[in-house]
Length: 489
Ligand SMILES: *Cc1c(COP(=O)(O)O)cnc(C)c1O
Image (cartoon, helix red, strand yellow):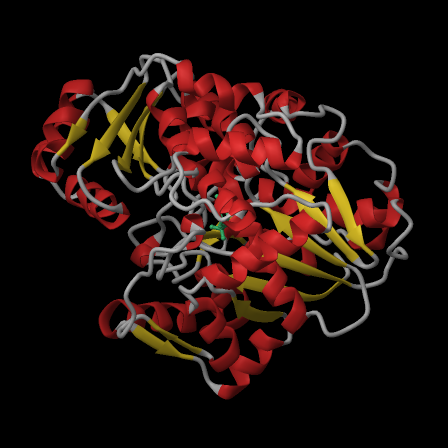
């Protein structure tokens, strides 16, 4: 399968590239993204065939339909990383909450958040491709807390890859920070920055345009790649679990094969729900994709009004920080799929220059045929955490945003899958506040009080974090990041 570009081709790049090329250098012409030329059609045959397959069998067959230029043995090794999830036979449990309502738990991987679903296999594949081409890659990650740990975990000690991860020193939870600063491998560098996530991102941007930095990369023969969800190598692994979830509802005797369901996703950079969009396009029976946001409700506005306007918006810090985002990168891939490259280029140009784009009313109708959306305040989220706990289900603040959207958007009496993107251990202070009213507790105290109240053990891998040796102690000012990284390289 070939990959083409969302904003068309600038004639300086090839018209189309292979999967391996698209994942090694994920930025396309005019700053666009790579998308598959044509999605494989799976249809009901595929669903029926895999009704009793394991997650890995399903994944392997789905990937083979994309006909990617990666050796089968490498794909198999990548998929075997799901064996390290809590239950190797069922890496993505689907839990029934009540009639018609299910939660798909995407956080049972090594760093306890859904980023592992894609980054675990992706890390192995990227490293293998780099080795085969005898090339060395640097991955720069600016993280608000979940991507960093998952990227470090997947790339640690992998050949031909180095990772520099920049995080806001006071902007992550203790658990997230400890997961990063305790990673011990010579190909990893973690730097805390004196500032917020925006500062981390802008430090990274400055670096990319710095002459001395680029000169050093050239001298050392190091190429740049990216591990965020602009990389299709992540998206491809995020299609699989939506199909798995559907089959799971059929297996559990709730959904009849062929019937539509709602898929309700807590969204930030739109990678998770893009995977669902592709699954739907490939034949998964879906009524609507429900997009849940927090108070950074740019996606809700887009779906409800057709206007994407960041001109008058400021980023709000919420209790679901992985969804605190204004520029949601993967929306572009949907625009391309619905309206084509010429129109996508126009819309993204408007966003870059005027900080706003507007869909026509016909375009909005097309978008609304697929998506519905709502957003949830922190206050409402706390309420859902509390009420759901009373009903016997403990969840994190990102997952909680889905409940508001479920109420307002799931209007038909059919099955809904809500996506749980983080374990309770990653955002324990917010949950402790919701459950016990104890405000601003440190993670370790919050973990203990939730553990006591919910009568569940704190997982060992989280408990141990608090006793691990801190490897990466640097907290630096924005303007010294470059020299830190040059030293490391
Ligand atoms: C990354 C993340 C999200 C947002 O997912 P997108 O694919 O960026 O939309 C939601 N919740 C958690 C916990 C995350 O880590």
